[in-house]
Structure formats: structure tokens, C-alpha cells
Length: 155
Image 1 (cartoon, rainbow, N blue to C red):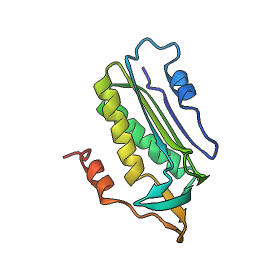
Image 2: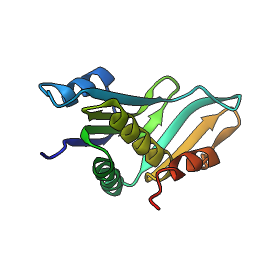
Image 3: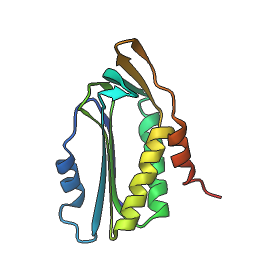
Image 4: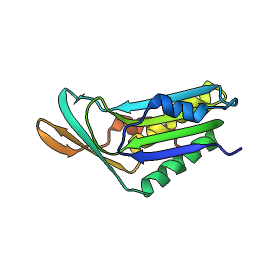
């Protein structure tokens, strides 16, 4: 059976419950669904954030996310994946990203979701600019994110 993988990059918001229902509707092979939704915070290290602007390389970003989704399917017995990532200007409280993984059992669904989020935080072709009281600037990668992603490296 081919594992259904949905990947969308969009400016519009998404509805988490709708996406979970779309992935699982009519399926009897799913025993676990794990969701992760990333939401724009209103501050970073005590400094207020007015908005984030996310940019991506159209076509390449979708292909890279798809490649990592396929890798997740090869590592764990997943039965479905949905990844939605927004781009454009996003204000605090708005959704940024959604990862949904489905499997017969919870462990694979959790691991697949963590793997995909660690990839999205560290390697996905997105660029993030933060707007705050002191102006705006591009956000650098965090060492903690690289450390989390390193656990998935193949020996």
C-alpha cells in the first residue's frame, strides 16, 4: 500500500481538526495519530515579537519536505503524513506549521512527527525574519535545534 503524504505550503491558515479528519477518515489501519502545531509566539527571550515573515523557495521546499516525509515512511511503519507550513507575514497567536503522522501504533507516529519537526526546524528551505520593537532581522538557527536533529543521523 502506498502511504498517503500531503504537503502544502500556503499563506492561509489551516484547521488542525479538519486536517486530522482528512487523513484518518474511513481508515481502519490507523491506531494512532500524532499532531504537532507550531504557533507564532509573542516574545523571544523576553523581547516582544510583532510578527514573523517566512519565505521559502517554491518548488524546492515542497520537494525537500516530501523527500524527508518519504524517509520517515522508510524508517517507521507510518500509514499517513500531512505537513502544512505557512509562509508570509504571521502574527503572534497564528499557526505556522502542522505535522500529522498516523500509524497503527503510537511509538511510530510520535517518532515520525519528531523526526519531521526536527528537519523542518533545522534543514527545511525556509527563512524567518522577526519584527520587534528594536526593528527586524533574520533569525539564526539555534544550537538546541541542531542537537535535537542530530539524533536522527544514520551511522
